[in-house]
Image (cartoon, rainbow, N blue to C red; front, top):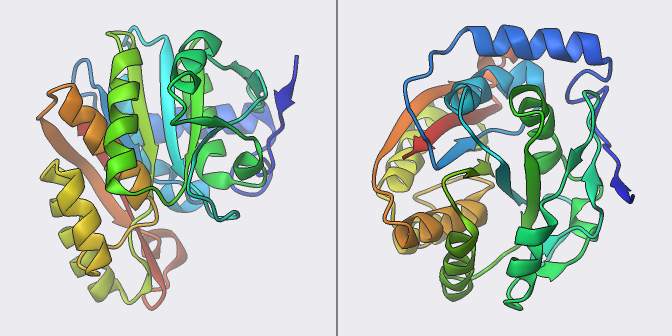
Length: 267
């Protein structure tokens, strides 16, 4: 069975499974589960020391849910592309054990000719990989649909959103990997991030993409979030909640070059 190897175990998060498991347990012990049957969460993707506590607020909402498939939408940092790329590998490696892909649902998506089979954007890409240990810990039997989202336009986002909505059932959830503003002062970061979060909560893919182009919204996952919002519009999901916000300054004590993080749930 072909395996998509991890690249960031030992740097972004612990490689030792016992240490990793203990960290995840600690992160998840702080937040409370406040939402039943969430359809999607947005969570950050930095090194665990910086953003995993924020991510835990999102992942806590998946606890004790009957989730069988997780669709992960993640941005590209290493490759420039304009596609929706699903890897050809059948399984994804984590220190806690591998996660199999949901080949049946993947085949449905690929049949639309909007998604493509391409592993290259997934190699050396942390944005999706750092989500996998949380999922293996919380939902050890779940299957994954890993999608690296390139620089897509609104028309493609809406077409792809219809296709994703068509494979979503009561046992499927969306996870979107996203960090907010990068390398501003703490004051500026908080101001920018508040604007971006408010635009996301409006649930309009058109508005978010437009505001990002006008530099009124700042996040590295704008294309995955645009696709998320298009999908949720198809599913008539309208409720959302900002679960937690933080910045890298909490861990780094550097308030001059700050990255923003948020967990948001949709239900």
